[in-house]
Amino acid sequence: MISSGSNLWPRSVSVGEVTYPPGGRLGPRRQHDVQLVLVHEGSMSATVDEDTRPIQRGGSVSLLLPGHTETFDFDTARPTRHSWIQANVPDIPEELEARLARLPAALPTSTSMAALARETLAVAAASPPPAHPLLHALVTATLWRYITEAERRIDPRATLAQTAREHLHAELHDPDLDLTSLARACNVSAAHLVRVFRRETGVPPIAYLWQRRVAVGVDLL
Image 1 (cartoon, rainbow, N blue to C red):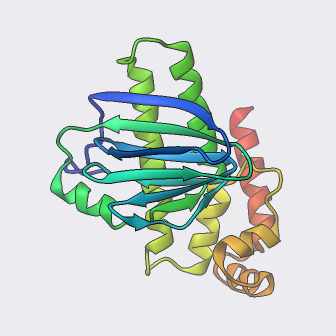
Image 2: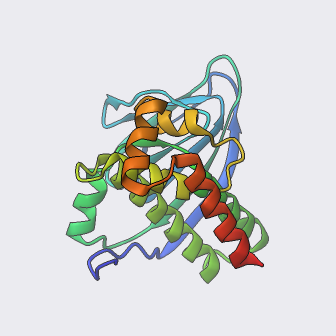
């Protein structure tokens, strides 16, 4: 449940995609919005308030928050293609501002995040009016997807089976999802994951995955 102090509805949005040539640079600039940067190809190094973040490579998404000075250096060996989704939220509640500040600066791009981002970019391209309500809703949903996935990673109360189930739900439509990639996402061995998951749910993780896929298929039918 989202509390009344968790408002992220934007006054305005900016969505797009760009490719920088090898050795490209952006900034320094002052960030005024809540922004997600999804790197698809190449890599990017961001310096925020003189603090250089780890290199962000293809298949990852990072969070940028208002009130900071940023500089971006792009892959020197090949072009870097990335998209951005940003929301101008004039009065972020203090509770939410503190919540955002605690999140990891970057995450792997989940299947759910990638799907939301693609839809957001498609709507932005097809709907020139910047105040289009669907576009604003999609930007907000993508930001909340990042928050949800990031907090799941840092929640000390989350059990291994719960973390694995949430990852399975988020990546349900990924055809490459298997036991090895699931165990890697949970930072455990495949054998340990199977033992714990079976003990807590009664079935191994891949059986659970196919149960969920069948249930989704039945719902669609």
